[in-house]
Length: 458
Image (cartoon, rainbow, N blue to C red; front, side):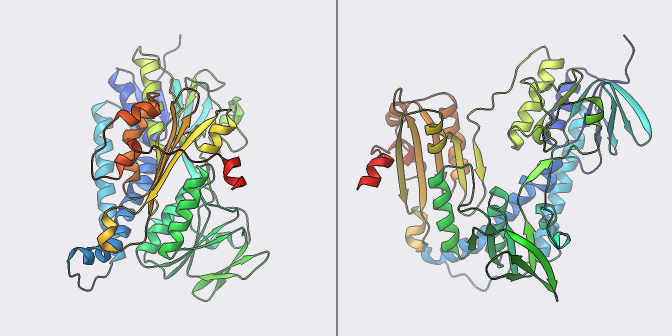
């Protein structure tokens, strides 16, 4: 068998690629990793990490206001956007250095540049041909802006993280988690935000009660939501922009941000020429072992469009390395993966929504509660938390847990273990809650919600 330059060549130094590279290197594989941008990928450089810093920043506006109810005298406050971005970028630099250290300790060769696959066992990068027994595609995803007139005037979440200043009026187009997260960030930091969504309710794919509850909470905070509207054009008007629609009044603003979806970042990678099967959006089709239709080429993370979450990419990259180089073959279980939306208030979910459970044929019992968090009693804030359990009526297993409210992601992480373990509602009921907390509501809900037909007959 011919000698290769490397055992493994990874394209993309995001969460999945870095994890696969360093674990494989730790097992003794000869690994090279190509990255044309910054090491860390979407999550660390253009996604969850910098976004979470901005979410924290936006929360302080309400924290200052709430403090008055607890006896604090809060003087004049103002926000320095440039300082926030400067501090955020400094932290990202530190994180990138940490990733570089991990790769170095795993003996991974980092090559700065864009790689293209030219053979089942070879890539070209910086004019050089490099061979590898196995190639792993971990190129992530990229924001997509639809082809409308004036699309060049819109920004995406990439640019939103490094705006030179915060505009006063912002239109956010989209209704997914990125759209609602940035709507909350911009609003919390002082901008007037209009969320524009072509459908009837934000967060498509989530439990409908979650969607409706968050929609109302965003409106109460002062975020305008314009449903059932799809922009047809963006016009430059003086120092601002006008967002036009087929019907209804246009929206004038200082910034238009599109958050209408992301696509696998696989264009011009050479996959089609080699016969690698891909979906219409460019996603690499893989089996349970992350192997493509070409046996020597694998893919993990958002490039596969299976479940586009950073922890999933990490798990896929780790499982790939264990399977190929660690003598520990294991596929990744994509069921019951907890996830969060860092909106304001945040969302945490795990397992099936009520709608999905019924679609899958389960007869379900629904337990639901909504209440004002204790913290807001003295603050006087009009914000309510929603909690919901979806339970299999036949066996009592908790199929899904959903929460909208303060600390939802932190709470759902623990509940996710219970749902993944297949625990029953009876076992939830036997668990004593920690009082006074919001989390205890997940083990104290006892009253079933009426069946949809019964509610309609009332």
